[in-house]
Image (cartoon, rainbow, N blue to C red):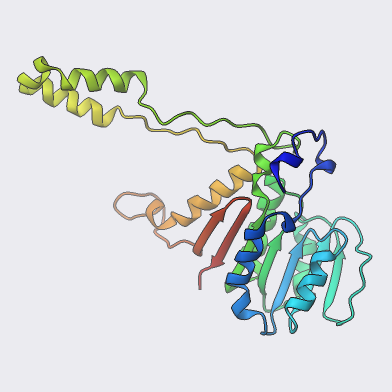
Length: 258
């Protein structure tokens, strides 16, 4: 998924989304799935296109029951009898429930989302599968979250981050606080020190479009224990539903707590 291949593209149908383009995807799969690959896993991939990736998983996971979902029928043929494909949309909760009941009634061990790459659809799918059909200790992988930076997607938009500089009022307070007059008069020094602390920039308006915004929502879940801290937070104290979360270019890995 090299950016150089996307520059001239005009529609989402032309955007090349393929995990083969980012080697670290497979590094992550080797790192987290590799130690489990000979176990009788329940494995699901959303967004299977022609079924090429399922053929790879069928070989690499020799004892896994493998399930695929795509909006189009998959014409690939699988020899092991361990692969089954479904047709439908990833945000269809009733379909996801039926698939889970048929293929992994005790829960999936591994889920990979390589489907729409649209934030709202991926978000609905993630929370439903994560909460209801991923085993404790299971892995959920999200591919190609960087589509939120691309206007070719319905929820994407270009983004240029602002440089990390002090704002105008912060620079002014800094100069005042360091001036000889303020430093010589304790009440002034105390007042400007208070203002520098309490009037510091409080919000950082990073990108929140599409998949990018969805992934940042997942970061909030990582902070659930601080969010609900009994002394400093709000709401009923709770731990994160994630054991951990790893973010890299285009790729998110989450291990479910439990």
